[in-house]
Length: 429
Ligand SMILES: Cc1cc2nc3c(=O)[nH]c(=O)nc-3n(C[C@H](O)[C@H](O)[C@H](O)COP(=O)(O)OP(=O)(O)OC[C@H]3O[C@@H](n4cnc5c(N)ncnc54)[C@H](O)[C@@H]3O)c2cc1C
Image 1 (tube, rainbow, N blue to C red):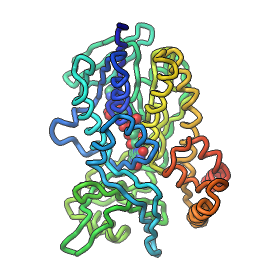
Image 2 (image 1 turned 45 degrees about the vertical axis):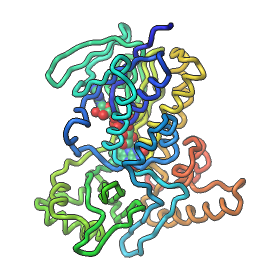
Image 3 (image 1 turned 90 degrees about the horizontal axis):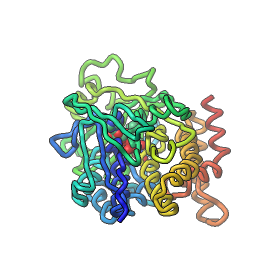
Image 4 (image 1 turned 180 degrees about the vertical axis):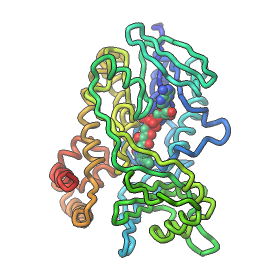
């Protein structure tokens, strides 16, 4: 019997954990070691500081579904939404139904379930997971990687394959940029965000937000609020604003925050308690880094995936979907080349780069910022749906519906909507 390859995965986020499921499912060919900088989410209350809502559609869900029982486990802790309720100042709320239901969860919940399912299925002789352990160095010649634990203990271990699933600021990718000439553009997008959580129901005021819709507000200055239903009648949300123009700037009390939400996002403001407003006040502002690389691998043994390879703006909610889809595609390439990583890695880069670049354009330019184009956007959305219903073979739906309701490749979605994307790009120039 062939000796199992030692696959080291850096980062136990959605991409790293799903990859561990896929590799271990390939039988005795792999043993997996996973190293994660943060603490074990199963021990005690995980800090909610970095959690935010995640909606998964077909691209992400098909990747999860390929592991028997996994989608059911995630669905049991999620809420399915039928569409979005759009709120704009001085207009009536507008319901945009979706053809396929959206699976709504939050990042920490998703990670916890992926992890729990992994440890239930595989024993420690094939799977080793170490938390509080930061990757500090890679030596591609010796095929070793070094770590520092939270107790400042340092150690080095060898790998057959090394996979950086270590997020937008990936140290594995940075090592390749510094040492191998990997080309990688990184930009902070102008938007910043604060996450928040409110109850979906306020029994005292007899108020509630609809349980099966994502609630989305856009103000005239492009400050946006997204509230996504979660189990237990909670709404997990994100307030997105221009980093130079923080709408909560100068607020020092929860009363001021609450008054802001009551004025600008009335339904949310009525659902929010003073305690929740205080949490929003104290929560740190986060920035979003986007990443665009010319390849996703080095030689025959280093790969980076998910946000490490192609972090995008969350404007169309595709970062996690595409990170999970990476694993689905990698698995197909592993089948095609019988786990010969010297062929698998260049093939994966070649196949996935066009989609990753297309996704960046779609994320940056699908949704317009100026009023006239927002009107045109909704007009095109409705028209696209109508024409597609009448002539399903000839007419494809508009960009959002293609991204959210199908798993057509991102490059094909971009090709079909290049005119619109160019128009939005010009309007933002
Ligand atoms: C506000 C917001 C809303 C979003 N909404 C959606 C959505 O609705 N739908 C969607 O598809 N996507 C969404 N996304 C994007 C999505 O969260 C990411 O694309 C997804 O989490 C990427 O998964 P990942 O595993 O590649 O990276 P990450 O989730 O970033 O995980 C990387 C892991 O690596 C660890 N790590 C980093 N450095 C080291 C190191 N040196 N050593 C060890 N471990 C390390 C990190 O601690 C982390 O756990 C959203 C993002 C934001 C910010």
